[in-house]
Image 1 (cartoon, rainbow, N blue to C red):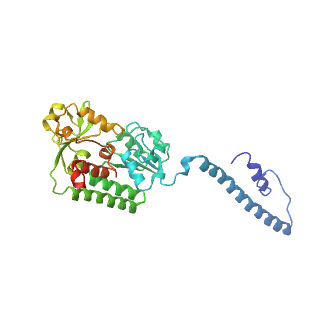
Image 2 (cartoon, rainbow, N blue to C red; image 1 turned 135 degrees about the vertical axis):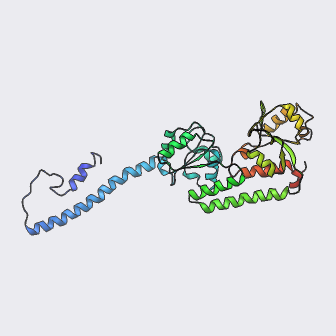
Image 3 (cartoon, rainbow, N blue to C red; image 1 turned 90 degrees about the vertical axis):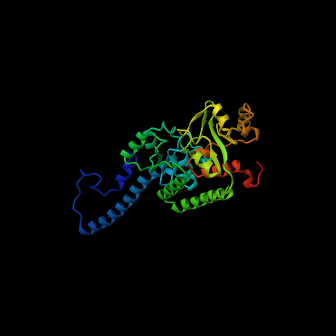
Length: 331
């Protein structure tokens, strides 16, 4: 209690409570009863005033501190795909911290940024006063996860490796955040997209393809990646699937030898000139079937690499690239 409010409280205290050093003469019985009633009224007034004094600073803190206005549970997301899942579940308003890479949906850019996947400090997380921290086993530093756990923060870690595990992750997070029904609705919608693609490409001959993450040096999507899984489910054959690593480096000689019918280039991200730059680059090898038949396509890498709801958008888009005829379009 502040020094300014103490004199007000002291003035309401019955004599002998606020100034212990004073002595008072014995009063007649009737006077004692009157004093008792008067004292009780003052005590009631004191309680009300004291409660008001304690509440006012709290109200001021809520109004001045945006952090305290966030509804419970307060959520920290340490990966872009987890941030997307939280928003899809309708819990975006609960986010009090995300990574520098969390850029979707647009509202994610308004959330406090805590750093990169590997550069988030324990102090930055604690400062958000989180109820739940969502993390990834491979993307985030294991030491950070261990420190948060040691401090008894509720840390939930996820690392889906295929489409089915993405669905399981959505269901799990939905349950943890108390929106299990919404999680089930999302999973139902995403399964419908997968079923649509499966039915559309059923019976179609697999199309040979490569997915390029980087051009110099050439880095492709190999086995065990989401892109590899998506290419297969979209009715294609990943020509880099025989590599010994998830992200193999290839020479142009090997690319020419493999002769992909389709090249999916995600190296330029979402730049407006990505399609032109891709075509200019691959025009250096005009005999490549993919270039010769105008089947060099660009995609948003987030639809291929982020294990969240948009991965199923990537599946649909990829299927249309590999089998345009199955979706009412020409090759």
